[in-house]
Amino acid sequence: MAVPDHSIDPKILESARNEFLSKGFQKASLKEICGSAGVTTGALYKRYKGKEDLFCAVVEQTVDDLYAVANKRGGKDPSSMTDAELIKAWDMDSSDMMWWFQFLYERNDDFVLLLTCAQGTRYSNFQHDWVEILTKATSAFLAEAQRRGLCRKDMDDTELHILLSAFWTTIYEPFIHHFTWEQIEAHCRVVCRLFNWYDALEFRLPE
Image (cartoon, rainbow, N blue to C red; front, side):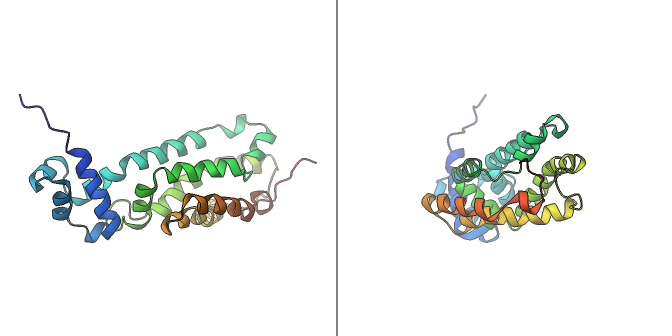
């Protein structure tokens, strides 16, 4: 029985990543991808149904990593948290924000693909969909803080989504504009000063 040859898989994915980054999904050429990878189109179609399937394979690990973080951070039970812990959850901690930027920077190429090159794939609305996932996770923390009278009670999920969209735009844009790591570090400090969730949500902070 023949053993499948997986040695060319990384070559295909790397060639596809470069082609998608250079031309976007719609203008990317499978012929060019195969040529750069040194494989036949037949070999590619044995592994992927078509161009969208290949694009999704390129970004799959980064998408899985993002969802894993969202599930881990949003999986806490807000009702089991103390008031201090609930309030702390809204703190613009520079080290935590730097962790996010580092996490994304380590996945820079695939994150840029999701942000700028995914039109025509199932990830066409990635920016909106990602914020929607975070809104669902964050709304439980907001609802619990509201129930305890720790912050303003008139903000609903729609407004929270709008604010989180603005917040995440400040995270997306440095990658879209190809910031260096030094530029991202400086930008992170600006974002932490720009977004004050305590003021926006009118948290009742301890004296």
